[in-house]
Amino acid sequence: MAVMPTAQQFICKKCKALSNVETFEKTGNGIYYCRCPNCSAKNKVVQTGANPSQPGILQVIGLLD
Image (cartoon, rainbow, N blue to C red; front, side, top):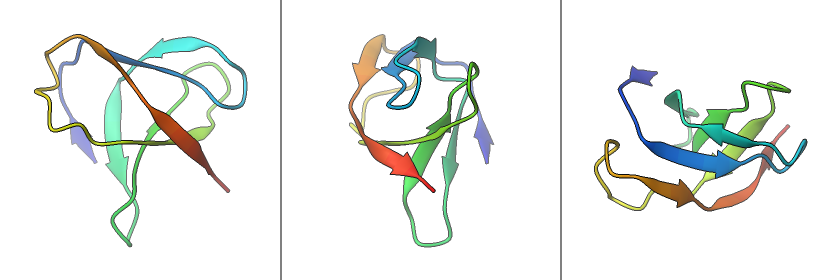
């Protein structure tokens, strides 16, 4: 789990809340996800290659379990 300051955001697929990315986490098979601070859902996100401090909204492509 990588903890880093970030200006990136995502819209949770489960509760639809706009949230700041707190951490990027990675599954054993290489899928990156962000936990929603509101409902704790694991949102699979597209890695854009942008610096985490660059503002932007990450595309969520689904939920993990």
